[in-house]
Amino acid sequence: MSAGQSQLNTSRSKITALQDITYQIQSRNDYNAGYNQFGEDAKRIDVLSNTFPIIFFAVAIMVSLITMSRMATEKREVIGVLRALGYTRFDTMKVFLVYEIFAGVLGSTLGAFLGTSLLPRKIFSAYAANFTIPNFQTPPSPFWISISIILSLICTLIPAILATVIMLKDQPAVLMLPKPSKAGSKVFLERFPFIWHHLSFNYKVTMRNLARYKSRMIMTILGVLGCTALLITGFGIRDSLNGIVDTQYKDIIHYDIIGVYNPVSSDQAIANYKRKVDHLADMKQHASIYYETVTSRPQGTSSNQSISMMVPKSTNNFHDFVNLRNPDTKKALHLSTN
Image (cartoon, rainbow, N blue to C red; front, top):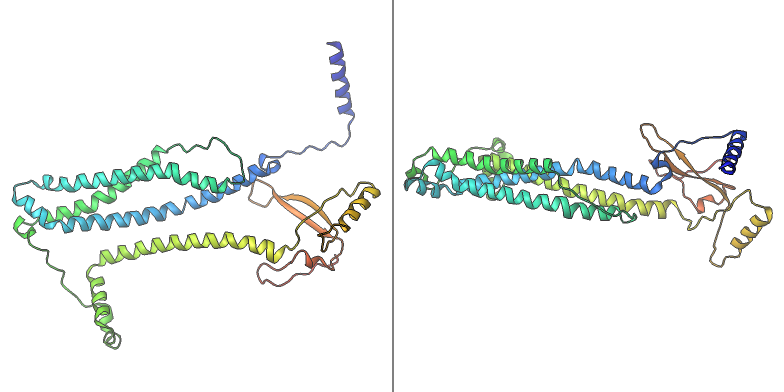
């Protein structure tokens, strides 16, 4: 016990005798590059997750509204027959209610299963391809699943119920007859005869139908808008990611290897290293630079960004290895001697 205490006291005295001790406080993002990179990837997915579901929900809502309202309208004669046979208004609506509830619950259940198991695993496997992260779990979120089920039921029930309630106000004899077509009306474009008279018959019919069924027109336009936005976003993400690799490693960087040695080594060791490099069979060209990895913390961020700093010994042939250019104008930049 006395020997151990003596060693401890000796170590404490050595620590006390040290001069100019510098302490560094680093977060996990600073000293763990893999952790930091995975966190940045997770942030990107988080940003996308705040945008894509809104578009998906909007498209699904519009499709449900159109489908269910048209289904109720097309069953007009069936509703008239049921009413003529003595069924009450509620009994007549039960057929639509059961169908819509079943469709909404089934679709939400399948969507919740795929959204919490299949899709997250595919995204995770793509972003975690360079990491070893075991025990990946995707627990279901009861809150968001409940919200999606409620929204799906609202979008399937309300349009059909409204359409059915409006039809049930008529007599059964009227319901069993085909629904009269809406009266045609002039469209705004007809006020310009020099344009209207040059249109073909099919174009005129199409424009008049758009004016007659405004709700369908609006829903169709919004649905196509949402689908087009998703397609353009997907192609934009693909083109952005693919272009980075070509720009970085074809247009900007032309070297293949950076060989690093310690500048404070002995002159003999450095000379041996340079001689070894000069005699490499596949070496076409090389240049001497000072290389150091430094960190910088931009304003508004909580983690340091790693920067590879290169200081060439000579700027004469540096452009053979790194092509510097202005990111906005794409014009070539030349290093000064400063």
